[in-house]
Image (tube, rainbow, N blue to C red; front, side, top):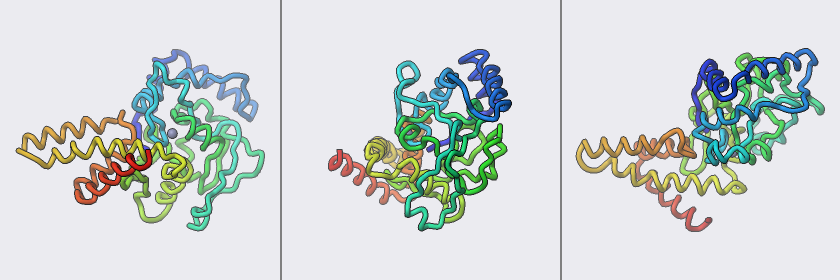
Length: 293
Ligand SMILES: [Zn+2]
């Protein structure tokens, strides 16, 4: 995961430019939910602003697994507008044994719990995600460490929930790259202890970011490493001008549009600090593609 920085004001401008009048219609719907006390509507309008989030996220990278999908013109069908906090109902995540054994605490959810009925149309409750991350894995689940506040109408006021999943759009949440980094093709927590470490462990487990059942993620990250390694080697060779030119090429390669950018940036840092380790990971990436593809 990486962060996609945008202010609330700028995001609303982008939404208004994409679909004039949408924000007002969305606000009217939220007021209906407030009056009735629950999320209930015959048809939704959030898909109308899907292109805004696709463009923000590098033209259509999944917010959670960083897979690249088709761009706005042809890609809408393969991407979901993902509600970070579930809108209709909340279901409990089946916590894997290894997280239970690690003593990570989870707030309980009773059966029949409704969702965040005032957030279905909040601009900072959306991202675009691939169908495996949103429909197969996230569904109506939202594990937290603190106390649920299902009547909130602004995600900015929900810090006390101590959410485990990371929201990547805008300034509200921590930069995902300060929580999760990569060693080769595998994601790891950045911090050694505490809630930040738990957030990383839960997010990695929740979206199966380090799981053989999503082997395509390893292969795709390996391809990025294969492309990046020779460029990084060039930054160590020749004159100062040649090195600077090579660094500029690396910077261009690591554009926010690049899939698996967190993995790529982690690999660059490793190359700079431990070049011999980076070479081993490059060799492992080749091996992974040869033996498992
Ligand atoms: Zn995904």
